[in-house]
Length: 199
Ligand code: AMP
Picture (cartoon, rainbow, N blue to C red):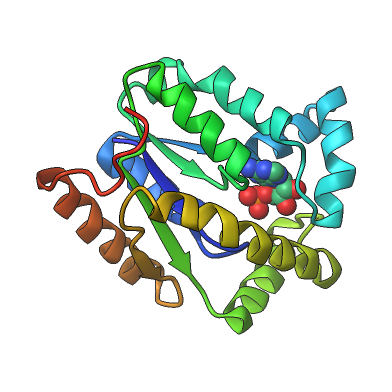
């Protein structure tokens, strides 16, 4: 099963992906985490990406598509993937569909984690204190939220055209959000694909 967690910054996509991947034998692929690993390792790509990420803008489609392509055939992805923070543009969504179709696979479900703006600001402030992410500040967050509004208006309709995109209330506790996701995933196991594109 291949799943996309879609949602604004600090919606809880990463937290939920980590819980769900362990329970369902899926592999979380977070382009944000991969980029932060490149920065940590001091690679040229990391250096290039850091400036963009710190401003809250999106890195190029080519960079993130190449990072996903490099991971998709790894053994840990064989049981399915939770895409977290990818795709963020229609070009990325199309590239992902192509990549999966070439392997006889497809996106089985796209979920949107919906969180109120006040809650997002609260969570970003908490994460800034706990993790010290350099893009968790009000200036960059403003840009990231603006970016989200812009790209969700394009990427969500791309997937809605292929099938239902269930909305999760991401304002609730971690456990309550996990329950909502699991209800969709387990319902999904016995139901035909909501998203039929790709294969
Ligand atoms: P995230 O950890 O998902 O919030 O991503 C942090 C930052 O990494 C974003 O603000 C972007 O600068 C960059 N990034 C992560 N994923 C993507 C993507 N799919 N497309 C473009 N930029 C991305």
